[in-house]
Amino acid sequence: MMKDMTKGKPSGILWRFTIPMLVSVMFQQIYNIVDSVVVGKFVGVNALAAVGASYPITMIFIAIAVGSNIGCSVVISQFFGARDYRKMRTAISTSLCSCVVLSAILMAIGILFSRTFLKLLLTPDNIMSDSALYLNIYVYGLLFLFMYNICTGIFTSLGDSKTPLYFLIASSIGNVILDLFFVISLHMGVAGVAWATFLAQGISSVLALITLLRRIRSLKGAEGAQHFSLSMLGRISRIAIPSILQQSFISIGNLFIQGLVNSFGSDVIAGYSAAIKLNTFVITSLSTLGNAISSFTAQNIGAGNTRRVQQGFRTALIMICIVSLPFFFAYFFFGRTMIGLFMTDSDTAALSTGISFLRIVSPFYIVVALKLVCDGILRGAGTMVPFMITTFSDLIIRVVLAFLLAAPFASDGIWISWPIGWSIATILSFVFYMSGIWKKGAARI
Image (spheres, helix red, strand yellow):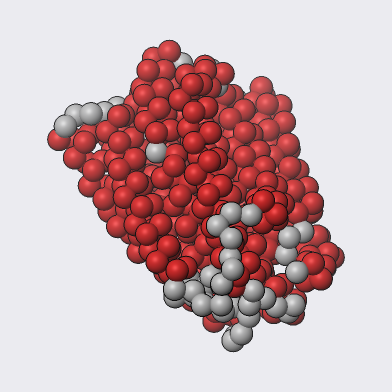
């Protein structure tokens, strides 16, 4: 079902649109966490470290997929808001074609250089084989990852956040069942969780694509749409490339940080692996708010209604408090319980590392949430230069400080760099939003 977000009360529209997206991302993160829980509990702390060591590399692939998702969804939302269904359908077809080509290129790179990437991250020898095995299997499923993200972006750009939810719930449940079966029953270890993700994600992406194709075939008013357009690809790329760079540079920054973490040994790697999965759960949930406000902004910019965007921002402020505060209380006050999900009580060094990370970072979730909402408005309006400035500021500050603070404070110094980078970048992003520079996007449609 398509939803026009240019009409009706903004607060009600945003809540109805965002809640299914939040539930979707929570299911997605739960099954990502289950991978690590199953490995840590039933295989061992070294296996958990092996999955964690490959995590920043998989995040680069995810970052490119998410950036592509954002690029196509903003453009499609703008055409949808402007009621230009012919160009909207051209944008959809062009996005799908480009997705196949891009995923094939990245798959080839991943297969050829996976072990090289792990060596560059200083992955310890005792977990290298399992890390490379997990990463190689993950790379085989990149087409499914990209196809699912593009389909999700198209659904949400049309105001439909429920359809992706249904596919993701099925995929999540399937992934958890396969995790338990492959690891506990078949004793496949690290390979088991990788193949579980491959199969669950593959089935979900195929079903999402079939549903999307049926829906756009029934779209009226789209006669004369092209299957592929270079000019449309250029327009999508103007949003997608900065979004991909934003997502990728964050992931590349995390690669540097992972390399620094790896230098402290497998116990710190395991603790960080558990904590970063929990942290990613929060950041991805908060990013969903940013993506929702981005789609809302794009549709209303397409309709030339900037006042509704400001109303949406006020609603988003309430939403970020509701979403971020429970995570803060759970991680800050019950960090030992949360990290304990991934390992046994005997893994004291790893437990201590994970708890320390959560207590340092979690009080600043509401800060980064504000940044993500402001970024969502800038991106939805196509105002990409300020958007990139805030992203690179966060990245550069966090990476530089991680290396500077690791010497005097050991691994805790790495964690301290996160809230400092978040805070400075949030101030910049909020200033750009308040300046009103994003309103110029309405004149470019």
